[in-house]
Length: 336
Image (cartoon, rainbow, N blue to C red; front, side):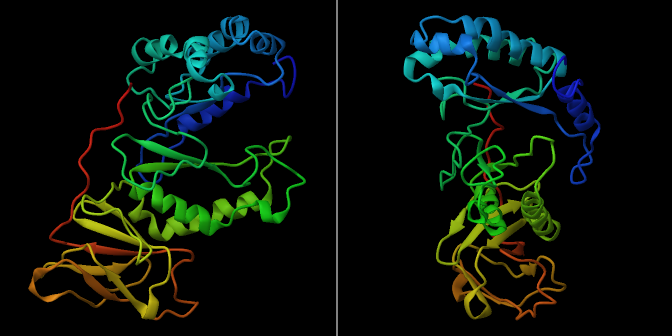
């Protein structure tokens, strides 16, 4: 703390987050930290790199000791590792020696019982980790047997803050809402990065995107929080719909307004007790299904005026008491 703000920013942040209670679960938030395995211009790292990573001065005197200090001092329950790609192939695994640290983190640290980590540790992408983060903007487009994450940025070209970035570099709110729906439907989660300025302030355009996502979740959070992938189907391309499930309710997240105000779904199988609601709109909607008990339902979507439509970008329909309701049964993320 001899330079910079002369205060322990990471310590202050960890204490603030640990005190925060989620309005959705009424439980304290879990504290996690980002850590880069390498530093671009550290002389020790540049020396190891010049030696084709056959030397390990940077790893032994900086990276590994720093990781142990991070856990012992701040107790993060999640470590989001990055930078493994700088050393490729077998060299990466041998150079970083991450397995030794992770074994300690998962078994002997003070947060061992709740510790999780991603898969960017050197030769481990989409192979080992409590969850997979893969490459940036990872979106498998299908249900995976392992927990995964889509890590992405508001600025399409950088994870930092670029004061010279044109407006076109910033992705629209709709993109993030659709990415979120897709991630949840396929059993993942979304990590959205916002790059602060040098003084710690958040640019108004980042505020706008975060606020837009928040306003959408305020209406449609039931289709996201605490949900799991539906056991029958995760998406229907023709209807531009992603499915999530919670209890006896299946949520259809329509990323396009239904043509002719008719939402036509092929996968839900209705019963005499089925009812359909549009989140943010009062009352139940009319629906019909094929005779003979075949799957499929057509929902009459109300023609809403701009002052009545509950949200923008995507609309959620809750289908209760379906014959084929139920979530995918899978274990929690493994620690491998």
